[in-house]
Length: 118
Length: 139
Image 1: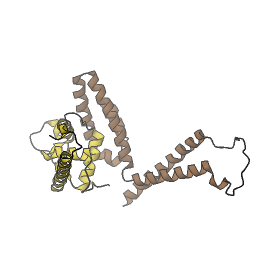
Image 2: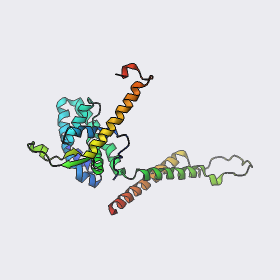
Image 3: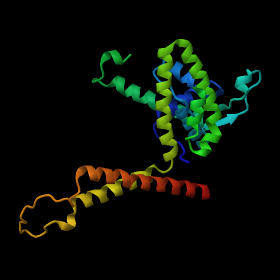
Image 4: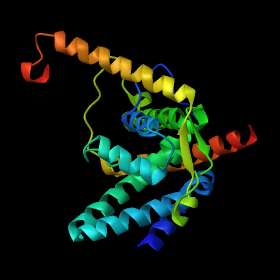
């Protein structure tokens, strides 16, 4: 099974799943809704893409399955919940730092239109 | 609609299906109910998105871990077919010019070559996928 490389730019799917789980434990559908919300509806992740990504992240040790929290609806009790591990949080932090550095570099560049520098 | 989606979920590799099919089915049901509540256009867009996701993720799951082998096999078969088409062993390697000859029925046409290419690549890919899964299972 292919693990997620630790020091490479993350794919948008991996990045958004990690970001969704940074807020707290979620089940698959909640992750999908969270990604949609974070991206203002521009990225709507399908179930196949989501669970394929979750499988890779679980295998890499960045995400783990946890027991559902108490006080859930009967429907949610049947679902699996996912949690970001320390390694996953670290990978997300590394990616955010990389993106920040890129944006800083782009803003310093004279070739970038002024409207994009704010 | 959910029943049809559940049937399509059977196309995923068995390990993936056992792990995630129930959740995918739940998510589809929730998404479908939400989209239907927003109207027929939203429902249609949801179905289109679900179909696209299914096609892409099916391919991804079946080729996971075997992509390099598929690329190598495709390159190998392409090379073989091009060499069959160009037939370098029939080239006149000496400078002497050969007289032009009219095409005969024995010459391979481009359409035939494409058909052979498609036909040859399919079993190679299937065998590769199968052997990769077998190796993985043994490991």
